[in-house]
Image 1 (cartoon, rainbow over the protein chains, first blue to last red):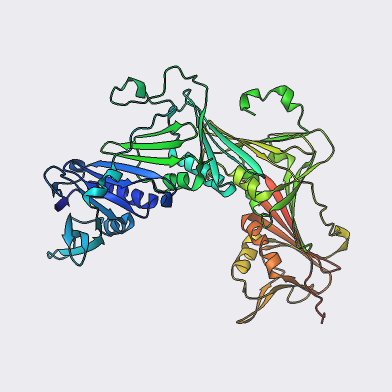
Image 2 (image 1 turned 90 degrees about the horizontal axis):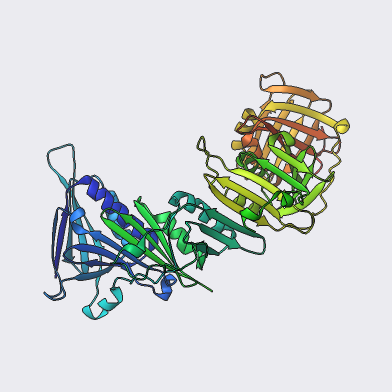
Length: 285
Length: 279
């Protein structure tokens, strides 16, 4: 098992740092899965994290100038590491103006990722700083828990409103209630609603547009053509999970979407050229 | 109910309806008196009065005159209701209460009458939020019987100067003592804290004193914890009037100019903490 990679470009480093920071805001612990082409940050929907799951995919070639890996075996050419993304995020943040950043899987007292950076100095002698992030290597037999979640058979898919607006609304609603109902239809309308003994608040977004899943043969389970465009699909979710998603994200996505499986799950997707982040929030009764 | 079913027929059912181009113009004022959850709203043809009280010793009133609203319709002489102010403020700021130029939240307030919720329609950038806040039986507010004929001492000064003193007040002091007198020290604020006593004196002739009308030396103490909430109003205000009456009650009136240059008032009445021997 070997892994070493190098980032030279400062823009790539910043982007990678933002992605990791976003992940760190979403979960305390996650799995970093390395394959020859991609890096994945994975959190499977365990009860401990409220049944929320996350899948973040990055094309390694868009971030790293050098990327070498050797998985556990030739057939299973992958490495799965459990880590605290906050540790990685902190290391990357302090090394933001590195000239070169090298990431390596190493075994010190325990397995760890070393992040070594050459920082610019005033003198000709470079300064090298190394951060060590402890990891747990996930054995082959547990890999089945880390499969990409299949696209749910959603009832409605819709583009999200500007995330900043949505965040403002959700922040206020969180002051008023613990649960929020997300509703959307195929007519580009989405409502966020809370209801308590004191107050009911509902925010109506219009003209959001619905992503054209149906035409894309690679995606199955798109909303059925026969669905009434005005009919709302809805899911009641823990407002903290949604807030966490909106608060932490630093990705500046080119596309942000939401799929709703009626009374089952809210599936949020952020797309950027070289990465995607999926976040699943289960509905509560 | 969805917005589309809102019709003119509906409008006619409201005993009170008001609209505003910029919700911040009222949320800012209300924030200044939001030291307790319960607020009594009294709408009259002159505008809206919002009252918040604490421990029967402190009363704050915000006056939002009818001119502040773009539309103001009232079908009765007086319409009163009580709502949770914290909830109302969260609703008014649902879009984040942005201070960026060119961004404002339009607001329409509707009330159908006793037993109905207070309905707010807020709109920003094409996004609409509907809030229904349950109303409560309005509690009787205290009449502090603070009439202008009974005012012993009165001064008006620019808030800037009082802000400075308030920002430096020794909060370990349980009370804030006001001394107002036709003779020296004219106007004095005193604290008695852990690290000693402090006095802030204002000369009656300084530029910042717009009016000085003290007839009798009066020294009264007020609980710091009661006066503390008024600093929010002070921070927003441009002028403040400090008055005391013969019973030692304190009235602080703050003149607040909103984003659109209109004037609103916030006033605080506070009971004296104890009688101090006059010298």
